[in-house]
Length: 402
Image 1: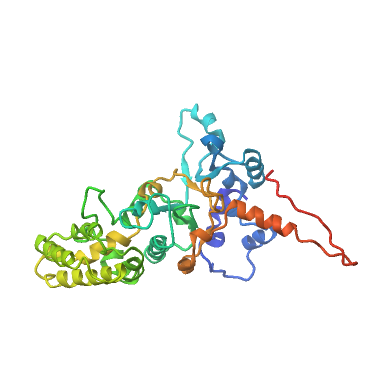
Image 2 (image 1 turned 90 degrees about the horizontal axis):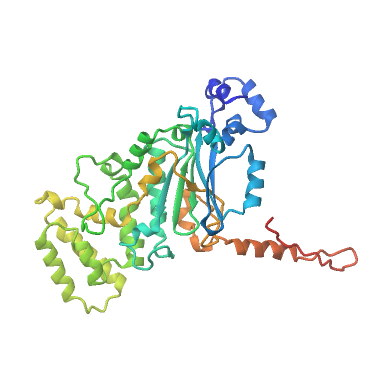
């Protein structure tokens, strides 16, 4: 069955609807799927136009690789041993043959489908975490990734109606999101940019004291209705994040937050109060929680007098907790993203899926590494079989990577 025939057969065989409407118990299209053993949307012609990228030893980078089928791809992986595998778009022609079409005078080589993807890295939160920096991650700062998953996943499903969403651990410092619905795969670059901008709240750079402004006229519904703030961010900020990072426990930390308040009198009042209590016997966490309550009370006392102070508390929470998406990854159809289940070349950890419904339970430090997997398989091979006479066999399984 050709791709054109599949598309012309209507919605009968679309994988996007988990409960497709079937008018009769017998359907010739479903019968074809039943006997073929695979969904026709996954035909080899479609697979053969998908771009894959291999990163080899010494950073040798091979783009625009394509394969006739999964078996050919498997052989290529075994012969090249790529340190990293990235997945790109589905193109109008086989990426491997793109040069043959370049001389035709027409632009035949162009991306036609690609999952809508999101990339979130913990390194982009270095200004709001004090336990780690750079690519390092621990149990105290990883919850920032957890709340990002909750916020983005909820909005993708409720605001955009997407259903087939895969969250994957990047293998080192963040998470990737793959939105696989047909309507997501066929979005244009302009439409992808619009979706990405929908999630853009954190703006500015290290030179801006205030990086979130909720008073703008273009506030999108996900924020305007308070859903992300009330359901996820507020409790996370006041609970887990305060406990792990103690955001007000030192002058260096609270000065960063005072800089987000536009009223200088309030800044001076709070600064004086906190400087005078610097030698308190309270723990860092207790001190941080107390100062946050003092800040909220002080701002709310002027909330109805100054327009710029009405959303100041919320802006502080958003600054520290709202997902910081790499927008460029989401905007372009031809952008590459690391393949799920491959091995990260620096940590050796497997890029395993994350269940958004149970993401609080995910521990990036417990994800198996390549060496651990090999050790486990070899250990399994060391188990000795007992024969009928009670004697042990000494067969050992050795893992060979080719």
